[in-house]
Length: 349
Image 1 (cartoon, one colour):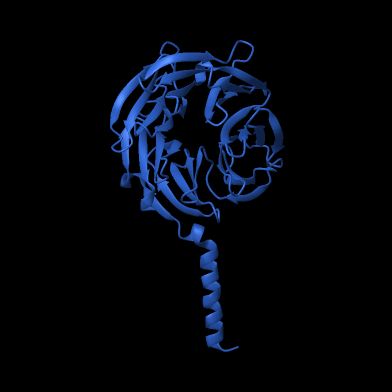
Image 2: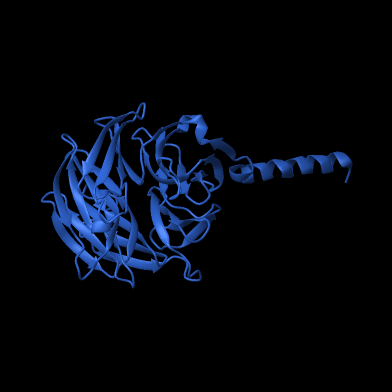
């Protein structure tokens, strides 16, 4: 075989290698300094997007002191991130879910085991539902809205397997179901498929019937790894897959929703939140410890980009046009600097 043939074959092999590894080899790093941000205060957690007001709601718990139980919700402009209002709440706010047609912001009060309803037309509290009690002193972690079936799913975190799933009827604003022993942590709703998917701290994927809120299946995703603590799941329902983040172990797990089978392990640091963007076919993942945000190709599951942050990225919300990602970024507990919201223009990627 002559040199020319060898050279041509080498070039072909190289070209194939580039195609196969484009997702990771040519991943581009960005810095948060390339995007807009707004400093808010201490204890900023989850975000909700209000398209009608062109605003972002940012939940916060300014203090963990027992005598400082008030919370604060920031109302920000989606354009400039200007703070329009600082809404003081009776209880510390962590999780939020927006029922925009009914003008209600559902706020999860982790330390009180309750949810508070805020009227987004007046930004006044209208009701608080006490979910936890002395028998089950669970802390609210996640609040997810199922608009089609008019329900809110609330995860209650507790020790010794006593975690609970609360299902609230959004029409009459009352508790509908309390599923004990489920230990749910994060949720995602597939309204079209009438399914709700929950992940647990035991490394499980739980499928619920969206019409009845009852458990359909519960599987251990990766039973050989006992250290799993799943936090969140994002859905690509067209492909029937979920992207699961884990606070204890590395990699984002890509799983089949109908079986829980692992299809791929997207190489990343341990992760917090995940959001799927159907318009760009991308998954965004926050990594608090690594202080970065990953952009994953939802076709190849390769890493496309990383955004380096000065502090710890936490929660995310995607704009309805799928062009902008808003991220809450938290400071170290010992830092005197404020937590902030980062606005990522996805068209720059």
